Image 1 (cartoon, rainbow, N blue to C red):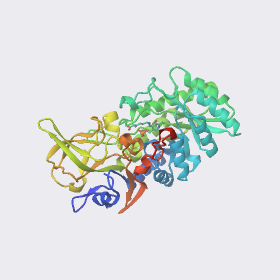
Image 2 (image 1 turned 90 degrees about the horizontal axis):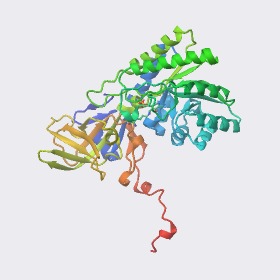
Image 3 (image 1 turned 45 degrees about the horizontal axis):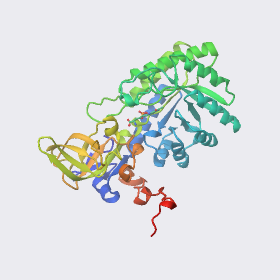
Image 4 (image 1 turned 180 degrees about the vertical axis):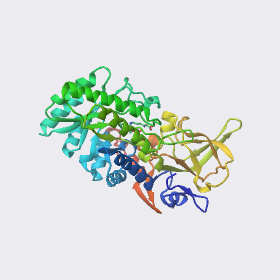
Amino acid sequence: HGTSKINGQGHLEIGGVDTTELAKQFGTPLYIVDEALVRQRAREYVESFRASGLKFQVAYASKAFSVMAMCSIAEQEGLSLDVVSDGELYTALKAGFPAARIHFHGNNKTPDEINMALDANIGCFVVDNFNELYLLNALAADKGKRVNILLRITPGVEAHTHDYISTGQTDSKFGFDLGNGTAYKAIQEAIAQPNLELLGVHSHIGSQIFEVEGFSMAAAKVAGFAMQVKNELDVTFRVINLGGGFGIRYVEGDTPLPIAQYVKAITDAIKTNFSAANYPLPEIWVEPGRSMVGDAGTTLYTVGTSKDIPGVRKYIAVDGGMTDNPRPALYESKYEAVLANRANEPLEETVTVAGKCCESGDKLIIDLELPKANNGDLLAVFCTGAYNYAMASNYNRIRRPAVVFVKDGAADVAVKRESLDDIIGNDVIPARLQTSA
Ligand code: LLP
């Protein structure tokens, strides 16, 4: 997929760059981002929305992979940006991302975070709860500002996805419930706050979703709510944000739809429901994260040791693991991989790929078919662009890998590999604990 292929030497090549050269130049583990594929995904979203004729914003959910270089690409592709913390906001601002296209999410934004976003004049706050509603109004008033908000509502739509990442259902820590009247009350409170400008509502039904039905259902529920609010409160929503959650193919058996199909389902549902009620067509915003960057990422590892347990399984260990990709340990996520330096050789054995953390659950792939892997071979794990670097840790004081962007034969560092000094960079030995030299 993307620009990945096997070159004449039987090596995996991405963005016109031989991955064995990348390993030599930058070391392993290494996150590789296929920049052309990221840009292609961004354009698929933008072009599909253009085709709908509706006004729109495609806000890249930076939680999937927030680094300054990615913010630059999002900016260049005309995307907006969804941030959920001061760290993501800072990353975007430092990358020169236009504040007016930044949307701030989160169920527990701190006063400091809100003030930082107010000072930056971001485009929109997605307000999650009553505490935040009043706090934001007060902090905006302190600064003499009036700010755009969406209210996050929980539409009661349950996406068919992993339990931990379903958020549209009623038992959720996020948002104002539609079903029990809380969302209605939130609208009444929002319009009563002098320093808040209510643009509309937001809903996010989950992640890694393969069907369009959930999105159409959410759109219909939101539309029904919009009608009620217009009739009873004389408030018209100018913006409907339907969140992210569009799936990608990690392994055979994953059956995501083309981006254009998700967008068409959403825009059709909005047009149908709103036109039927003679409601002015709102602007549609979405927040794709995974589907923007997931399949553009590949992690390159070096194979080290192996352990064969006859009749049970054979482990091969790589020089990374749950520190750079916690998803298999957290969600039992599945991945595909190849030997990058012998990508055209026949598959000879079934192995389990283990990481190097002191934890038995640190397995990246269970039962992977490979050529017979030796110490020094390179393993490339696909579809690691989303929620990998973003969720990486320093467990076991393992250093986070570098990130390189590849395109048209060029490879450029977007994030430097952490050094051992980075690992102790924030450590302080209190004076009373210092051993006399
Ligand atoms: N908007 C909101 C409000 C969200 O909560 C999320 C994801 C997105 C957009 C982007 O969703 P996406 O298009 O990436 O599915 N760590 C998990 C995924 C957590 C998703 C959290 N929210 C994983 O690794 O699968």
